[in-house]
Image (cartoon, rainbow over the protein chains, first blue to last red):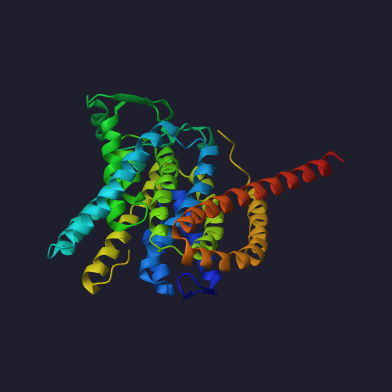
Length: 307
Length: 83
């Protein structure tokens, strides 16, 4: 099928299939899936300037479906999402602007790339180690469908979240839906801002950074972290795709076709989370940051930027 | 919190969704392509707004249509059982 906006010719069933796979990943892990969609669209023949914008637009639709499903399942903390979304957008702008400024400095790609690789590998290792430990803990004997979010979500390193909750920087707020009595708003803003900066640097939603940060640093139960992250991605990706569309970097038709597949996949992914405990979801999540790291290594070695 | 859905209902939901998408894909996207290209070439700001509106609209309409069809199928199954 010929797409006149980008001038690319791509099999629509390839786009539906790609959207379907990304939809499952997004619904299950609460990530945008750009680490897969970006390279897959590039390989299919979409010009590089269209890859990021088109991917972001399709993320809006896919995340809406998954977030709605998570909302029905009670997995969205609206108070948390409302605070996070502004810092994410701000962080995203800072990330984009910082990279534009740093481009003028020699070897910046190598320095920033290596730093990001180290961060991503550390996250992957930490998530795997913690989930492995958490799986060994004795949990509730109730059936999975009768367990609360906290009971489903055993954590081995809960002391990190306890430390974050003890930070006494005003203003503080309660997150009753996530089972948190009091947390500094600054802690939430910093986590979402850092996620936004990575989003601006690497493209996409950077859910593979934000989701573990929400679980380990803020102490949000895994299922609620996934649902809330998706809800927040709808707004931040909407803003990003609007900016890209104004610059002519979005092929709407490709995004619409991808979203038709992603809509189905996102529903499957969201429902699947109800059949798995938090540590199992996190251990399956552990390799995802490594894919992001692999893409950066590819970019550094070949000189091509996937995002 | 909503009870866990049965796999049977979930598969029916997906099949209906897939059927809807095929119809949508064949008719709507075919006519949208030319209009969007025209908008892209002549008014980039309106193009950006419409891109978001159409994406959100597509998501909402497909969700509503699939929800209606699932309700319709469940109603029919319920009537059969009552008979």
